[in-house]
Length: 111
Image 1 (cartoon, rainbow, N blue to C red):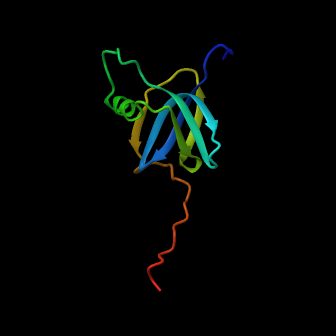
Image 2: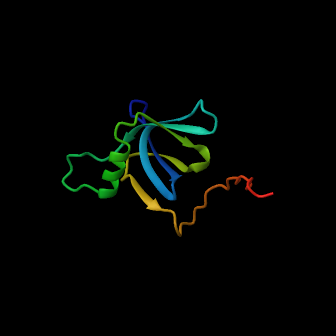
Image 3: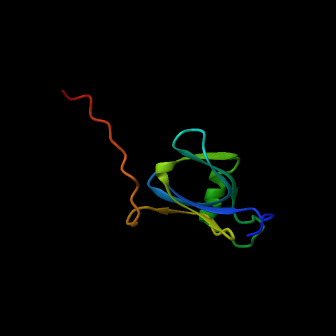
């Protein structure tokens, strides 16, 4: 990839029991400890005749978002790709991917 082309990254991450696959031009390690920053989301052109409803839902969800802060433990994978694909949301039920275990607070109500 030449220097005059913008990089394209595919980011997969967990969010509320679902796996989000989004494409963006910029990804950084955040100043907020434990987060990555995702900027300049890429979605298909609105002028296309066929619009994928899943991608359209993501487009409307991220409409007006300048930058997202995603917890590192929610990130499954980040790939640099040659061209963007279709952004989508899939259920993580039955997936072979398990999120990193998060410590659960003890029940303080019982003595």
